Image (tube, rainbow, N blue to C red; front, top):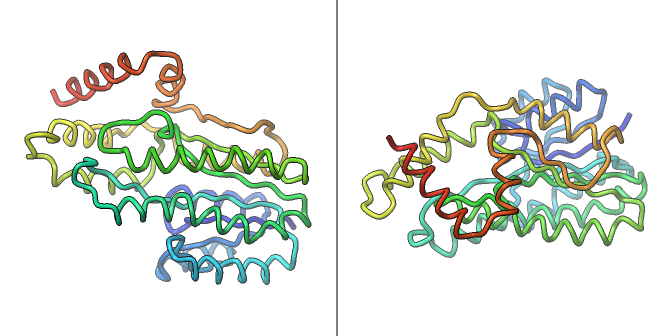
Length: 271
C-alpha cells in the first residue's frame, strides 16, 4: 500500500485530501495543529501527528514520526498547510509577516528536506499547494500572495534539483474553492470596515469571501492524487475556478491596467 504525508489536515482542503487518499487505498499520515482535530482523521484510518510548522523543533519531531511510520519508504508528500494573514501592510507588524512565511514557506521546506531520504527510496513525488494568489494579488492580501510566490520560486529550484534524482515535484494552484479559510479572512478584515483609508477594500473583500458558488475542495484533492498516481503529468496545475481566468489574463496585461481593473472591481462590489 502506498504511503503519503499530508500537512494541514485539521479542516478544509487538507482533511478532504486525507479522506480522498484513504478512499483510494493510500496509507495517510496527516498533520494537525491542534489535538482536538485528531479524532475525525483517525476515524478515517489516518495516522495523525501534531505539527506546528512555525517551530523547527516541532518540524523535526514530525520528521522523526514520518521516518518511523514510513519505514524508509515514502511515496508522496503533500505540502498543503497554510495560513492567511489579511490586512493593510501599513498596519501589519514584522512578527506577523514572519509567522506567515514561517508557516507557508520555511516550515514546508524544512519538512521536505527532512523526508527526502524516504522519498528517494520510493521514487516518491512532492506536491506543493500554492494558489493563483501567487500572481493574482489583491489589496489586503499582500502577505499571503507574497508567501505563495516565494514558495513557488523555491519549488521551481527544487524541481530542477530533484528531477535528475527521480523525485517528481509539482505545483497545484487552486483558485477560490469552498473552504473555511474564507470565514477566517472575513473576520480578519472586519476591524477595517470603518477605516477611512481601507474600509472600501475591506467591505469589498468581505463580499468576495461570502460567495457561495465556488468549486468543491474535492476537485483539488482529486487532482493532487491524479498527480501522485501518475494519471496527470506536468509541473504546474491550475485548477478551474472563478479566479483562474483572471490569473491567466493577469500574465498578459500591463500592471497599470490590472491595478485599475482591481479598483473598479472593488468599487463595483460595494454597491
